[in-house]
Image (tube, rainbow, N blue to C red; front, side, top):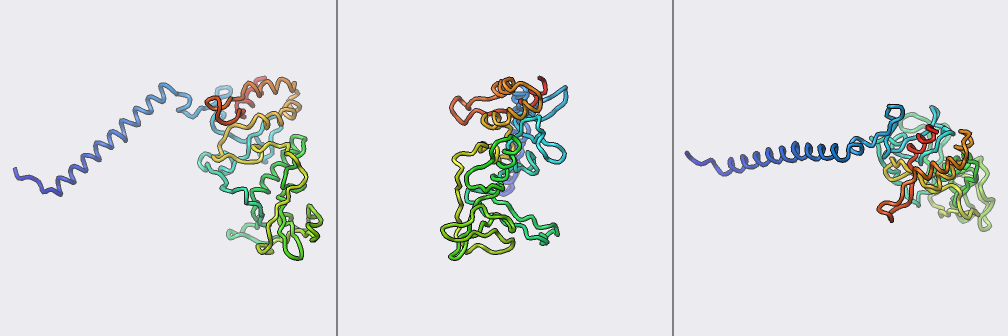
Length: 286
């Protein structure tokens, strides 16, 4: 029998290689790894699902919001950290904001203006203003000071654009009263929506707050947007409110926090953290 041409032999060899690798890596390997995972790590392989009264209520490794239909915090529950994954903890939109510490200038909404889709112009909040607004809201919820460095009293970034003859509090839209009256002899004005202040020098003002009472994880989102944990400090901040709303002894609530606090990974990496869903379920069992 006459040998096949070399180009046909090469193509047949390639087809055989694809077929073999498809069976090995596309069928056998997934079946083996799935079988091992189901046998040795069944709970984790299936998403670490948490149940209450026989019903799935969430996952131990994915956070969730504890808010009402209007998006307001349910006061009887511990609150999770912020999430920018979709509308919050959306596993199909896991992401960070990609905003850094130099993102301090808001884009003020222009009254009457509309965006490209015909919706009212909402402007854009900088990362700094997002942090300030969250800190103010949490301070009100927990009955503590929401003040923090580089934030104004009304919960926006304390940032000036400084020109030769004036200074502008660019994140405070007129007719707001600027957080300071003057800066180095220059009168401080409120920001006018739509005006271009790019030529001015950006000057964040630290203010007189030595240390914020609201912890950092309470006002910043995690990189994935799905973090189910909060810091022990944030849990302790919320404990008095939860105890009061539930009519429970504060000492008992703090004991539950300790029971649901995980240690550092491998004993030295990271910080102790509290799983919010598991803590709230434990509270419901009390």
